[in-house]
Image 1: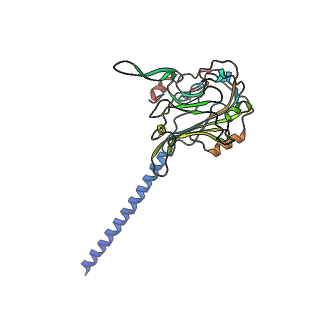
Image 2: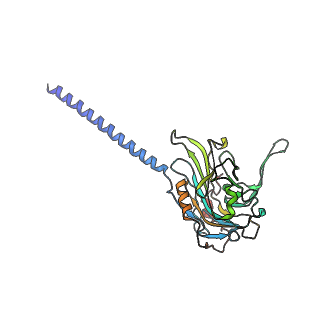
Image 3: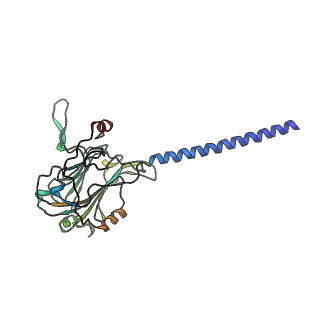
Length: 317
C-alpha cells in the first residue's frame, strides 16, 4: 500500500514539474517576443529644422548641408529612416512664396535634392553593336532620395527618387483639371498670391492585415489638403518595391543660375517618419514664419573627415 502511495506521489510530483516547466517556457517565449517586437521599433520620431525663418532664393542658392558628420559646418541631422511598420518613412516640408513668375526662373530648377549634386551620363549599350539602348541619365542627377524640382513653370512640380526597381522613378504634380474639387482646381496657379505650405511624404507602404510589403506610397500636401498621391495600387512599378535612401548632402536650389530672388523659402523641415494629415493641418494653422532665417556665410557643406567616410557608405548602392 505504501509503495502504491509513493508511486502516486511521484506521478503527481512529475506532473507538477512538467506544468511548471511549461509555464516557464511560455513566459520566456513571451519575453523574447516582446524584446523582438521592441527591436523593430528603431529611432524615435524626430524632426530636423534645416532653416528656421524665411530666406530669399539668392541666399539659399546652391546651399548644401552635410548630413553624416556632426562636427562639420552646416551639419543637419538627416539620417536614414525606418519605422515600426517595417520600412522607410520620411517627410520634407517647407513654406514657399513666389516673387517672380518668369518661366525661365523655374524651368527644371531643382528645389531640393538629398543625394549627389553631380550630373552623370549613364547609358545602357548593346554589348555587340555598341548601340545606345537607354540613356535615362543623360546629364542628369542619379542619386536622389528625393529630388524635388519645377517642371516647365511654377505650376509644375516633379518629384523623383531612387527605388529598388528603378533609379529614376518620377511623379508629376501639375495643375488639376476642371473635374477635380474646387479646393484643388488650379491651386498651383494661385501660388504667387501668398505663402504656401508644401509637404512631401514618402513611405514604404506596409500592410497591417497580412504583414507583407506592398510597395511605396508618396503623398504631396499643398497647405492643409492632400493634393497628389501615388502608390502601389495606382502604379505597378511601386508594387513590391522599396525606397533607396542615401547619406549624401541635402542641397537647396542646386545649379541655380539666376541672381534674382524669384522665390522665398521658409522653415524647411525634415521628419524621419511619415507625417499624417492632422500634423500637416496643425503646421498649416501656424502660418509661415515672421522672422528672417539666420544663415552662416559658408554656402557649401565641408566634406566629412576621412574616418567618417570610411565608416559610412555615402550612397548605399
